[in-house]
Length: 94
Image (tube, helix red, strand yellow):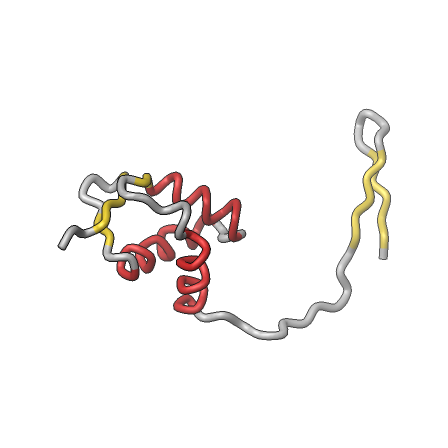
């Protein structure tokens, strides 16, 4: 079903209503973290800020803001990173 909306300036926009939606499957947090890790290789560096990483997760992966912190916690564990000042992420040096 299609609706036409008219804004105050007279321009028209189309809006669609979804009648039926099915979920084909779900993805676990671990699977998402694994997929994100593969794609983040070029974006994560020593000293990256939590805000920058959250912005990348939202923009590139469509992660909703409320899930960024949880996902960053999992990424820290997987990548052996720590965050001493609660702002910057650093790799653990062996």
